[in-house]
Image (cartoon, rainbow, N blue to C red; front, top):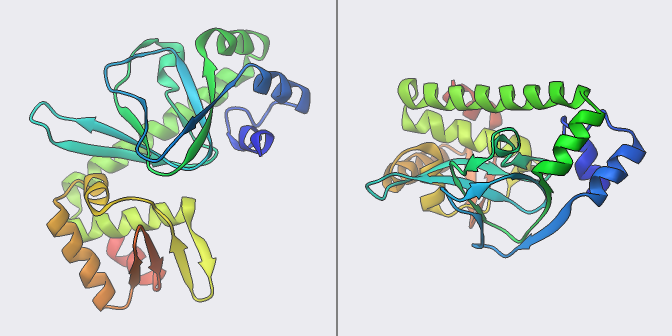
Length: 225
């Protein structure tokens, strides 16, 4: 499982088996319960984390107390990578939203790996560019998309990464509360709930606790545009 998680990350995909093994030996395992915090916004940061199992949310709290959910990360995804090149304060709070297992890589062994395998720097730049592109897209959505469109897009994104085909539907175990889903979309819980209720009424989705079944992906894709 751990070797598969490491090889699934574009940053490490170019490594051979021996290099992946060496990388794994330099990483420490971290286990979190649901609701447990990995690090807080403002904490000093000098390491990255690879999610092996579970899910982690990245959140930001404004000075007036409002919270914004920046991302939900799952198996094979990285967090905290910015501080490897520029150690400093964390820009978000990372919290497990499901029982989670991660691998931790500190600054020094990663720099040694970069020195030994310079091509990894190109993969890291690509990974950072992809993160920046997603951020730019999210900002554009907040400006140009209405709430139902953002809800549809969020459900489709979560489906792409966590969805499981079950007969005629796609079950998406997102593990988010209603408030967290609203924070992810950047809207009030009441407005997001109205959008979800509308999608249910149209037969596009079915709600199931902290999961959702996508029944009509094509209609959701049209609404997300």
